[in-house]
Image (cartoon, rainbow, N blue to C red; front, top):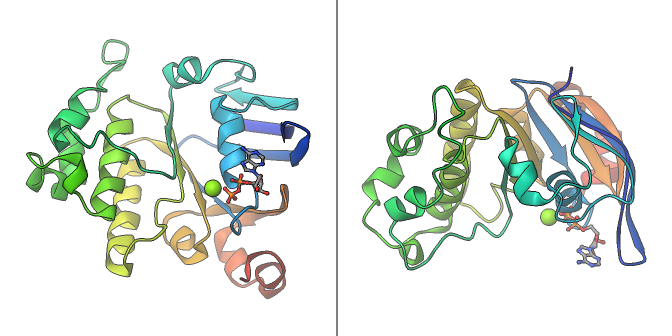
Length: 235
Ligand code: ADP
Ligand code: MG
């Protein structure tokens, strides 16, 4: 059974039809990429999964149970963590306080995430733990928002464009951190415009364009597929 499965999802904003029969699956232990240009429908796919914009039709199942129509907090409580693209943290709280305020689901989880465990993946956050959220660089904010979501003990982590706007060196670090998170047993679905970042962290990917999936398969096959890249990913 797939950890996450979307079957023929159609999503609208008002009368605008945005997602067209999107079907995808993520297996436990995978890092899967959803790749597409700006406006392709990546964030809308995530909003459809997490319940921020419920799909008009189709199915969304998490660990075999339908989650379409549930509220975002209910979906989160079942074990889906969402890191939105705005990377907003609490600007007036310190790094440590940002992590403390969200600790949750501790009781049901056998080995819950702790601040120490988050720091072991993001040593930079330990160095900055007394700094305010407002004093962090873009890369540090991204690490903090991921760390904060890990504190909710998700089984599936949705990352919306984590590499966007970050310096190449930070992007490289972030890729290694995502692999470490996967090694800790967290399944990851990643939305990205940066296909090279995806190739570094994931084995499998989907390409989305104009709200429809155009490719699903191995990242290594996608990297060598000039036609798909040219048609749907070239800027
Ligand atoms: P991506 O995350 O891949 O950049 P989005 O999912 O944000 O793409 O957007 C997909 C499409 O939906 C775009 O055409 C965008 O203009 C449109 N869109 C996004 N948000 C809204 C909204 N709140 N109302 C209407 N249209 C929207
Ligand atoms: Mg987006």
